[in-house]
Length: 360
Image 1 (cartoon, one colour):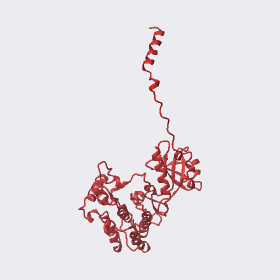
Image 2 (cartoon, one colour; image 1 turned 120 degrees about the vertical axis):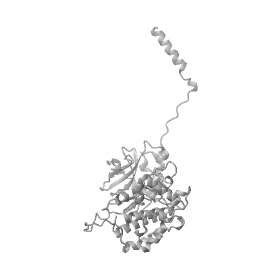
Image 3 (cartoon, rainbow, N blue to C red; image 1 turned 30 degrees about the vertical axis):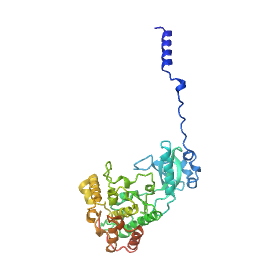
């Protein structure tokens, strides 16, 4: 076949299979990001501008050591040598609705101010101005859960004792409980249930002051109240079902999340006072997954007795406080005290801690 014939053959194929221009539709133009979500102009947004930390745009940031999501959790040093934590979102990868929700929730939690809430210090963009970040105070000692598993946590600032007693100091343990109760009272006074109380969601400063991790109050965070109910597909083995109030495992809809917070707070108190995991014996016997399933099952069972449901022995509290703390763990939400009553009960213990806490 000659070159002319080949060319004619190919021309014919192209004409035969080429799309008809009359029937062609132009491709839709690429959508630009809304102006209020453009990382180049975020610094001028009225809700972000007063708290904008421009210095971070030229500061080196690094992934948080041990962080679960290195791209979302970073650390940096401010000009005044303060170390800060950055909760980040890459705006080149996220959808507009996710960006807007992240910014809106960041602004909402920035307005919450209490000595026992981790403070939002401001906002900025990092990583060549592609990533928006919420700047929070850095809590050097990490989560309360990891601290409580360290036998020397309550004693590392004091001289070693010849008795080798590893039980927590009553004064420091009760103060920690009161601090967290006061932080929760602030949230409840603003009609905000915490919804994710656990020792993993409390962060500890270098001075051993405890603060609620304010990131958990962002509505774009996963909420454990909807994911811990034992439904098919639930992830057991993370050991957080111990904090879940029984009604959250029994009902599809729970109206009083404040009462559920009180239950979880009482479990957390027991963890602080004993430096032991809730239901420790069950976890030792069944392992993380088996124990989670077992605990979820007995909590969901309306016939379970308070003794079966108790995460700790009642003797961890002084006699005069044992009753109100038992009420905090009552299976019936209406029987639990308010956070104001809990604060009132704890205050005398901090002022005059006479009860001896058990050794670990």
